[in-house]
Structures are given as structure tokens and as C-alpha cells.
Length: 362
Image (cartoon, rainbow, N blue to C red):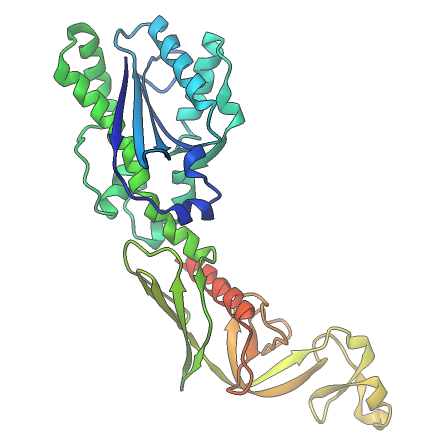
């Protein structure tokens, strides 16, 4: 049995493009089976959701094995593999772990050409797995993401519960049992489309924002951000004095300022002398005029000049010259002044590195 349903739904085309997904060439996929192993269980339902550019709607197709027989399983597999050959990308939720390997094994069992092998795979579950702690999610099941995003779902069953429902349907053919089976699969497929905004957080930490200026204040620097893809829910992260707050399209990043003295280390220390009395290193072309008793050959650890000013920490070296408190210290800083500002490109990369730093602190 094949059933088609049309749904009207908005989607963020720019977001899909950001993740290199083309709506017209992408297919949402979810399957239902009577077990985990294709050798000891039956595939009874395949559901897909695709974008119809001509009518500007999404259409859901479900192939259902009404009889629970191997023959009908092969029939719906043939229809499905023929259909997906027209697409480039499969979008799914943990399909890399279950759906795709299961379908691949079924194709091999029935000697059907596996057109899935030519498609790209986009696993929403894998993409958002790092968000569990950041968003304080109790678990990463699709239904949990739907609840976080406050998406309504009519289906109340899980896949395991529906195995018995399917077996009962093959015996009794009662319509209400069929509706339970089709509803669960349809809600899973449509739910994948509706939870795509969860990827806005991934895009944000990957650099989908703009930062054009920073404001030097008494104890910190304030950097306003415009977020490319509006966040579904507000977000606050704090770590080591850095505070990031975001809601919808706007965000601010507060970074503590270090005021005092830091050192700039020269990389070519063999070309320098260190002056102990002045606690600084100078190039040999200049130090040649300094009495030998007041100079020593510089080492990597003392080949520096000292600088007093206002500095910002950077998790990785983005802006140069960079300064350190000590040669062995991995923390680096760059100087900020009212007169000289960093470029927009540097500021963007700097903010991205700070967001990544906070992201991994959680």
C-alpha cells in the first residue's frame, strides 16, 4: 500500500543552504521494522518527505507492508529504491546508525540495486549530539528535541510498542491499528522538518553571525553580534569571566580585559641578546654596542620585550602580535586601544574562537 499526504510547512532555505542541502534534492527518511536485525525481523513501513517545488509544499509518501510477507517487503523496497534514485541527499534522525544499514541489508537480501549508496547522508542526530549539555537536554531522542522546541505531536507511541500493533493489524486488518502505525511514522518524518531550527545553534557556533565592532569598557569589552539564523530559545553561557547571551537574532559577548604588563616573545631568539638589568631582549645589531658584561645570549624563554596596556585573552592565536605572561604559559592576549581596532574579519574569527572555547567548556 502506498499513501501520499501533503503538508504545508515553512522552512529555512538559507539554513539548508548553509549545510549544503538543496530542498529539491533532499529527502527526509524514516522506517519502521519489527526488530533491529534485518535477518530476523520485517520491514513494514518506509516513509519519506520531499519538497515539491511546483506546488511549494512538502509531500509525505508512505509504503506499507499490509500482509507482513517477504514478497510485499520486496515490492515496497523496489518502489522506494526507484523513488530515491531521483535525489541527492537523505536527511534522517540517527539513520546512519539504523535506517540506512537496515535498508542496505534488505536490498542485499532481495538482490535489489542499492541506490542509497549514491546519496549523501545528513544525520540530524549526529549534528546535534554536542548540544546535549549546552541546551541541558535530558536525552537526544527525536521526541525530546520536539518537546524542547515545543512542537506538537499527535503520536504517543514508540517504535517498540508498535511492533505488537503491526502484528495485530496483519491478522485483524482493523483501520484504527493502521492509523496508529502510519501516524507514528508520519510524525517522525514531519518532525524532522520541524526540528531543523535546532541546527541554528550548530550554525551559530560554526560562525553564522556577524560582528562589526567592540566597545571598551572599564573592566571588559562588549561585542554585539547579529545571529544569521534566529535561535529557537535564548542561550546563556559563562566561563572564565567570559559571558555570552543570545536570543533570536541578537547576542552579546562580554570579555574581561587584562590591564597591566605582558611580554612579546621573539621567535628568532638566536639573533637577540638578553639584558638582565633591563629585563628585555634586543636584536644583536643594536646590542653590539652594549658592554658584554650587561648582555647574555638570549634563550627562547627570555627573548621578549615588555608591554603595558589593555589586553584581551584569545583561546587561540587569531590576532597578532600576541602577548603572554610567561614563555610556558599557553594563554595568549592581544592589545586593544581606542585608536586601533581589529578588522571585521579578525573580529569575526576572534569571536568564533571564543564561542568555540565556551562551547567546549560546558
